[in-house]
Length: 480
Image: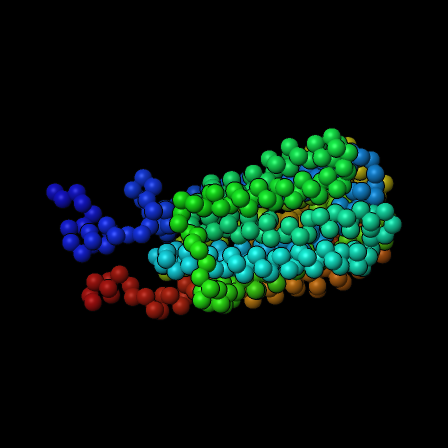
């Protein structure tokens, strides 16, 4: 018996000249998600992605934790105001990363590896230029933007200094996120996790040294953030080396790459901008109730990403799985990936609810929450945390829209949540104090998360229905 994969000389010639790098006799860039257990793929990608995301969000949490131990409400409020603007910046980079990952995932699923490498390399140039311009623009007008947000006095001064330091370094964190998305697109979840994990390690080491050791306070946290971003971007390039997915950018491919990836990235940017913009409105409403309320909201805003890192990781993790199976024409596996994500989201939120309800007093002590902030943290731990089930529905649905050819749907639902689902609810809730603001946000996401899930299921159903009319049945194929 011939043990070779092919006895055709032409096939052997193609294999011998294959440009793909091999590890253990397997091409690194093969479409890994078009076969095998979908639940296993989702779990593997989401768990490793969650560790990486947790590392990114832990940077903000550690900064806030250390600053809170300086016992200065103006500093904790300052980092809350500055981070609100920083999240808007990061949303742009995240949108580009989503666009790149979705596009490259489809090409990998369709076995177009060379095309994927060319587009990825050229698009990185565009991403760096755009994020550098955005970072410098934010730094220049930081004082003005923070004033509009409601910052004043010492909190305004400290927040402005913080943004002056971290904003010009925006391309570094966006580059790290984009390279991590590229690793997920080719199915390398572990290396994707390493890219962002290194950032948390640097922050954990540098924060206490700079904040307390050198007595730099909030400026020390900002310097630590910049150095962490440097480490993340370097780690991204090092972990991508074995995949042959980066080459010297070709000038003639920059515009085609921008158009092709931009068709997904621009709506994804619009989608991702909606969440921080809605948060800006809520922060402005909360600022009416004093620095203690802003600080309490800031504690919740930093606990949520770390606690729900698994749910948020599903957004980036299930995308390549859907994209590869879409490229391979396996629509039933696309539906399975979506439903698996919903089940895992429900489980994660249920566990988080129990943990927060049990540990609310510990949280209050750890972050030295005072006054109105205590009521907000308790409200979140015992009730509002449940609304993140619907946040998960919204995010997973957006992933389906972005990877199944309907990115404008995700833009519409996210902006619907940020406007119709935030402004009227928060405005009415503000009449009942800071707790009303938090409850208003929760009610809005319940509505739009539910609608987004129903729309995503409809999109998947239509894809399956269209495919059933185009693809002949197995018996029909045999007759042909």
